[in-house]
Image: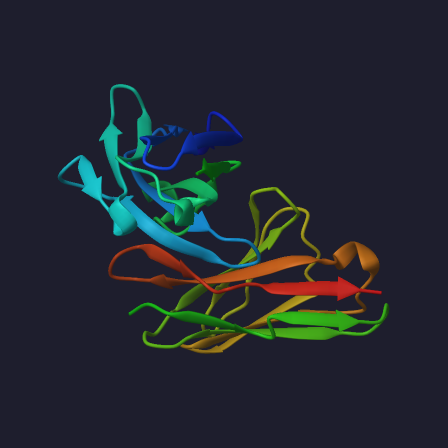
Length: 115
Length: 115
């Protein structure tokens, strides 16, 4: 079975500062990893994903994440936060043993951006 | 591409009535769709996996007779909450899976309030 741990239910940064949202996963088989963003009262929007190949993945809105197998991590970063980045961020994992169908989500991290 | 819509976005109903929520993949065909429930300030809980032309697969603890799922076409899945009660009030989100990339794209969600 897969699981995801997101450290920090809330992360606060100043506008222009580095954003780092942490995600660690557990999977007995090679995983696919995803980051989604959710704005209030909306569904989830895919930011980026890792399946195979290059371990540094670039997504939309300037976000990127690096798959580190040795650390079982997939942390999300953005060099410079913008006010519009304030939202809830979810890390998720899927794996071959579910046909890469089922997503297992972390508990989410709320990003707060102050002026 | 990969746009998923949900209708309605909000619904208020009286206890004991049934409510139908539609989930559509607008620009792709989805043999598999998923229904999630999200409680305030919490992560997404997978309710069921909907496969076109076959019966849905429900997660443990989800009542099949209360949450009826129909996936009659490659672009439409419906969730019917039968005999709704106040405890069914929640945010319901669907997703549709793009088979070629094993990626789920989410709808904007439906806020159900049962009075």
